[in-house]
Image (cartoon, rainbow, N blue to C red; front, side, top):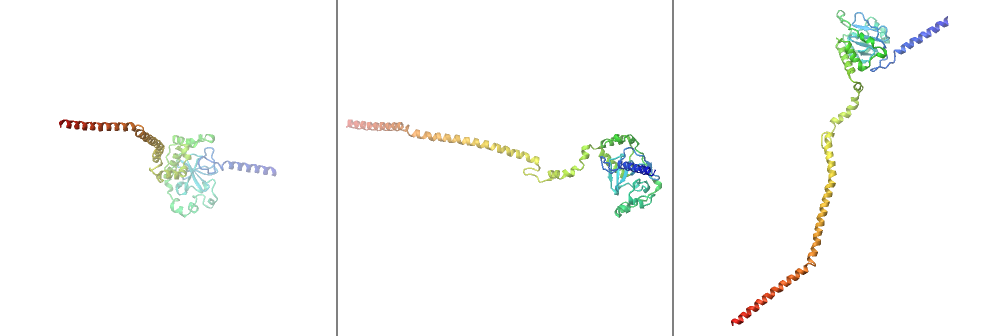
Length: 317
């Protein structure tokens, strides 16, 4: 009998550890917070607070003002869908009524919660320090008679469980079509709008949210870097470069045409020089003979006139 009890105890322990493993180390489309809620959880109002808690979820899981809130790993996370994706919320902007949830409603409280009163809120000032306490002064004091009513639960999400749980790009449309409540808390409105904007973006833009920090320096260099010579930017500098290339291409053409013209002029001058010796050489002889003949004729005519004058004188005598 004793051995049978030991076996049953071991089996129960192994089953418990297996169930716990199903709820730990699950990655989500957004931030991995180490919990998994495969089906819509049971949510029960916290008496005297506009907050719900999930008694059957082994986590610090709440619903307030239209959003789900989880305290896991010393951080707060929020989502408009019951199984995320989750967005991290800084301690300085966690809504007041979320901070005021009594310790007893934390289903997986941290070890340091155990020294605090279960009916009161966690002593966040002791945990997060004096600086946080100064910024959120009075967070643990409020008029309990003027507590707002809890927000309606988005019960339509019950039909989206396990494999039917929608993708991130589908969640925004489903939520806006089926849940028309608008958060009253200013901080919740801000988180709600940020998550709605994130889900409404195409997947490519959501994946590139960190790319600008990587590409920014290069883009800044292209926009505000030193302007290249001949223009203020690279596109303006291209036409002069293209023109310079055209000029370089046209320069050999002009040089070749000038060389051809010079060669023609040299050939013409050479032909003229070649013609000069021919005109003063063999062809000059006939010209010299004609000149001597004309000179001889002129001298003969003068002699004839002189003889005629002498004859005339003699006759007159």
